[in-house]
Length: 82
Image (cartoon, rainbow, N blue to C red; front, side, top):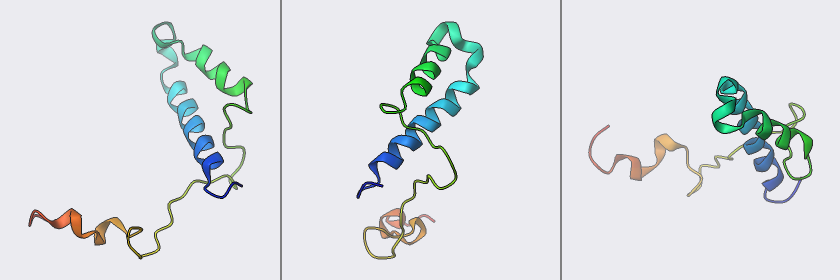
């Protein structure tokens, strides 16, 4: 894969788009669902999608700023509310 994982993020976005489009198939006349699905599935170079479980998108939480787990981020608790 590429150094920054951009291809995997594109695959994630396009795969998520397909998932969402299949959920609104009954609205096809309003938002051209079937046309958009065809556009994504017929152009894998432009719109890559996940092909297997080895395709993954992840955010590595190293524990070193700024890649801290959300519960440990001090900015989430600056209001004094928890």
